[in-house]
Length: 158
Picture (tube, rainbow, N blue to C red):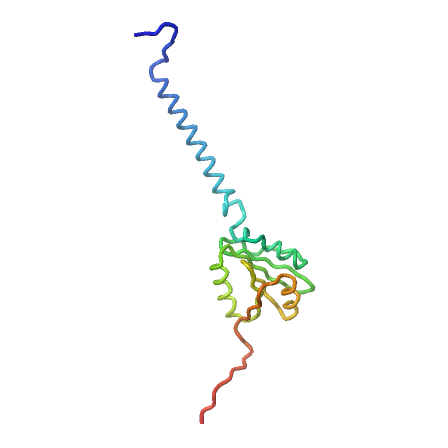
């Protein structure tokens, strides 16, 4: 039965419209997925998770508080590290996305000796000349590494 005044669509045209809409939806999803992959959190073209440390203490922010400009040397998922110079001293700054990444870095670094200023999601490598100044500027806790002075005490037998 045909209703007067209503034209029927050619056979199969509904199928073509649905196929066209399906392809359009697929293309939109592909574009959104690509954008997330490139510019989303930790994306290929975006900033690493370590750069987005909680509390706003990025390598650049810590360097600014110290009074220098950081040159980024490592930008990875679990570590962002940079170096700057202040008062003739090289200052190494590292930030971490998680407490576990920070703890692992500190544990490895302590084997080399030295002193480290440890804050919330960041670490600054200290020298004798910078320890008091940086602790005053940044806060945190000073942590010592392994003792490599060669002074070992041995119990005498006899």
